[in-house]
Image (cartoon, rainbow, N blue to C red):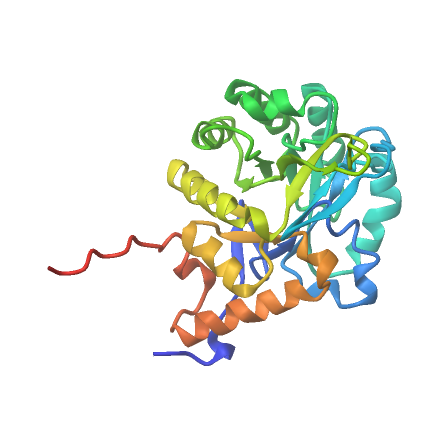
Length: 315
């Protein structure tokens, strides 16, 4: 029996943070929100995961560094950003005017970089959680080592944990054989939650010039084409740990987001579709509300991890 949509509360508690709804926008696809604020009220979002932020400014990789692919895109931006001091002084004051949560995606080349960033942001007003980006495939140093070895994942998360009181959410890479040891390493190191997946490594070739189409040769593949992989990994990770999971990867519709919730994600991040339809996050929020109401659920938590296997037909 269904409910009135007015009786559905979309609020969720993730890693100790109360989000007004389970839909965040993903790092690297939303900048620092200023451009999207011209289109809609950012206070409608559950949260904003801002662009990867490093200790010092980064100029990123040379162009071309974005390429559209069937059902997705390749990017090799290389974590271009103006550095943490610019973020705190110039970007964060703009975001503070909105009634939404801000998750800062932090990036570094060394364990010490992540720890220092965590300490720098620990008591900054308007920062609600840290997403540890150990899994960007488009930088030259460090991330493959952090993301492909559970011991290194544990080391980075532990170092951040020691330097901040903020909720810590490592973002995991799909470019591993088994996601579960990495999820467990995060939990054992003191993470409050995990997010996954980051992009898959891919490339493209121009057959006329016989050259790679990205200056960086490889890039991160995102968009609807990676959703089945992301959904499988979210399910596996949610089965492996007791901390909450945030699902990312090819979410473009409310139906996509609901699949991730059923697989075990407590929240989702919406990424590549922001480039195609900037209003997609709002449609997803309302679509989740309508699904919950029509199926008699009063909150997203009631469906998290409730997927079941198909029953064998009776003989």
